[in-house]
Image (cartoon, rainbow, N blue to C red; front, side):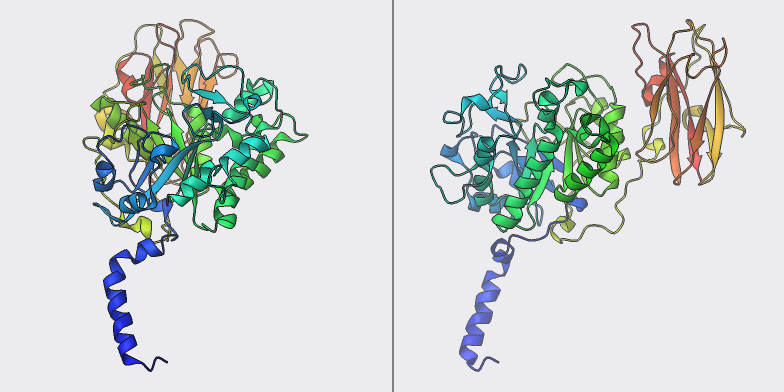
Length: 491
């Protein structure tokens, strides 16, 4: 009991005056990453200062830990606190980019680091970046573990001291580069996938336990295949090993970043729609485990931006369209951020919304009449009704399965057909079917089963190669003469 009333009054006045800054004083709060609805990614060209980041309505932003990337102009804790606690949003999550699979020549550590850690040649796409033997303890010491040595302070310690909420770890997929030849690696490090997961776990443990930042956020970018059994060919039981490593990985990360999932190609920007089905399937395992998927594709045209946001949101991801240069904070028309103050409450949503956006929000063009030799016809047990854009629609109930058959008059018995069949939000399966594996006669008869798992509208599509022999379908492929489809409404 406080007997000194003057002390009580003075203390109360102090608290009242301090109230706006209390969150800064107790900044290691639990942040609800699962409540992020908008995010952005900028790694350079902060020439306008940080006001654009501060004033934006993005819930989460990935940025560099310094103005130029080096130690001479590292951002201070005061500067990062301004971004987190001021501006349009009540609270922003600010993550620092950090490459752990490549060494970057412009970073503070490069000149003095042992050069035998490096691969003999730089990354051909980014000449200042060189693959590093990330499992080596000397590299790990550069990344984390020297908080008290000012001259040799580690990369992670610099980030923590600057007040960032967490880290965005790049070049996770370096495990593929060094890994077994079975996964197109150079074979130098058979256990590279295990080593990378151990590395990420050690980084998280250091930040949370050694440095005491118990709510420090860890987000790897790319390398989703690290949870797949194909990354563990050296194990006696690759599937069992993959499950063990996946659990370890999921226990330490909060989200995953993913580049080029939908518009994939050789261009830096504005590739054609080329959905990476295998990657989507892997990312959905992260999503289903409660890990936010931060999806970034490098597209600029409004049409592609809209298509990307629709596809990514449909899988339950958080999308952001920008340029690969990552040199500006982009506000995409029709997809402007809105600020979700719930990111600062420390409580994830009870039931994250993972259902795809209903297909009606992005209505495909009417189905064409395929050209001669490419005629499709579908037969299901149930009568079709006309759906959006006059396309066929089949209505089924949750738990129901429908087996449909497709007849294709193929030009060649070797022609492939791609079919999307599994109606489960965010878990569409794509398979390649040839006459020898899927068609039963010269007419190209094949069957597939639709399984209804959740209410809503989805779609089934199948396609054959275009004139260049490439299979490329999307909702807009219906006008190409090479694709056909139907909507499925689950009641």
